[in-house]
Structure formats: structure tokens, C-alpha cells
Amino acid sequence: MRLPDRRRRAATHKPRVATIEWLEPLMTAGNWMPELVEMAGGINLFGRAGEHSPWLQREELQYFNRPGPRLVESLQMLAEVLHPELFSFGLEGKAWERLR
Image: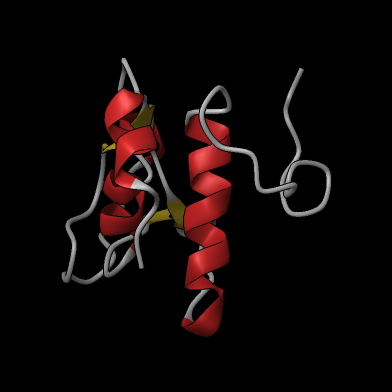
């Protein structure tokens, strides 16, 4: 599972991303999510690829857990959010909403 490399390399910045798995108690996303963030062109702030999701105190925070076949859609969604100038999969308004 990969995004087109030429578009990913064209990104001039890597947004910092905090992925949250649970709100109460607060848990950041581990396992596959850090890798998806990196593959989409971002820098994951919490958790490590292949490791269990870590607990987090609210004060440490600067939602997103779709296991199984929806990983590709999750990657596409992250790419749209992090680099809308490079990626458009038609998911905005359907799978995610821009906060204004």
C-alpha cells in the first residue's frame, strides 16, 4: 500500500500529526497508525509503528482507528488532510470534515 511516490516527494513540508485512539482514558494510536501518518507525508507525534497504543495525559496532547481493509482509505484520508494541494480522493465531506 503506497501513495504515488512522486507526489509524496513533492510535499514541501511534513505536518505534525497527533492520532487519538480513545478519548476516555486518552490513548494515542500506535500499531499501524504511525506508519500511515508517515506514508501520507506527516510526522507522527505520539506512538510508534508496531508498538501498542500508549496512554497519554491530556496535558501532553498537542481520532483515527480503522483496522482491516479500510487502511487504504485511512491512508488516502490522511494524505488529503495533510497535503490537500497534492492529493484528492473525494473523501472530504464524506469521510472527514475540515474544521473552520
